[in-house]
Image (cartoon, rainbow, N blue to C red; front, top):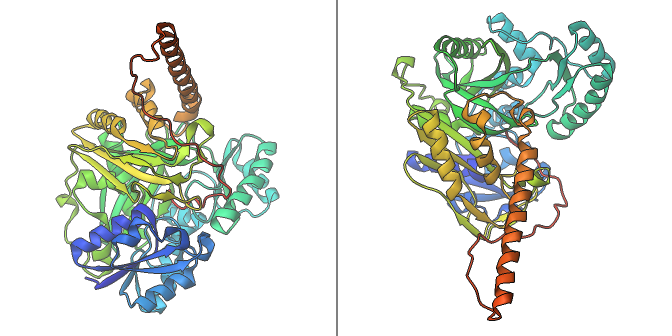
Length: 504
């Protein structure tokens, strides 16, 4: 095992990695930008190194600075976490050249997995079903129009390099495709550094199903079951669960087999995720490989009883995978809600500020992955994820009820959050009936209905307050019953700078 590891990330994932390293007796080196000097990962690490100013381009995204920091600290390995440069082949290659082990796939695998068009070709050769289209990368609207007309509408525009739900647009005719190409190109250029897109047939309705894999890079691939990730807003995941509700055993075995076959075809090493769309007939179509640790990995850990960061470190250290597929036992069900610093009632506007009060839920089967604490200043520069609330139940309905209880106990003041929206989703009749697809929020007008409910609740509370005030005035005593309510969240100042959304 390594003696020391530099963690090239921040926030909850950096804290997550530090804790596993401590269990393994591995020293940790944290990096931080100027606004993260008081961050929890900085406080927990054995050593911390300033990496640059707040702007991620000058700090967490600067590969040369990351490798230099690792070399200066004399670490054995670099763990990239997720998001930022976690899937960047150039970082992996520069680590190799510097004699530092990159905790993740090889540069070659990252190059192939990072190009969705090339990865689809590998999938086809491996016998893994793919969506029609996506044969070439399009850099002009004219080439995208040609591809769309050949496939036939409706189609989907997707970023050819990178993921995270960026650069995705539906198109039902030439006009929509031309408009979508311009918007998607701008978005991918800004968030991924490249603007190439590809066109494929639109699968709709569809569910987003992904499979967790662990591979030693020498042909041994273990699958740890599938995750249901269909609850999304604009292709950004809000809630994940495992196992996928309503999936029959044959379909479950098929999708797991596809993931293993593709991992072997890629000579994949370390932990990763293979993502699929599933149509209404439970046919699967490969989307992409996430060649890193996923944000939603805790739900798999809860069912499998494994520490995936430990698996990553052991594989990177050359210790391999010391168990077989038959040794894996997946029990119960698990669910994760992403608690983001956003205001759903205001178009999911990011919310920054000081956390004035914080209370986390607890009890059997409840896990919190976070890096926030009372007094912590939520910066405006990075991803809005505050915490990942994870629960485990005997089955999915049990997990849903436990999640509702945990969300009801979750209290945070100082920033707007998605806690109440998550409860609204979990109580919706379409969710309780497990009628899920990637259009769930739009199809059921979830956000609109949530905003209406928030407004109605506020109006009712104001009415109750007015009635109490009237009673007090009539009594002439100036006193009356004391009504206790949760204080309203602090008013937030408008965010002046766009966040860097770094992970999905």
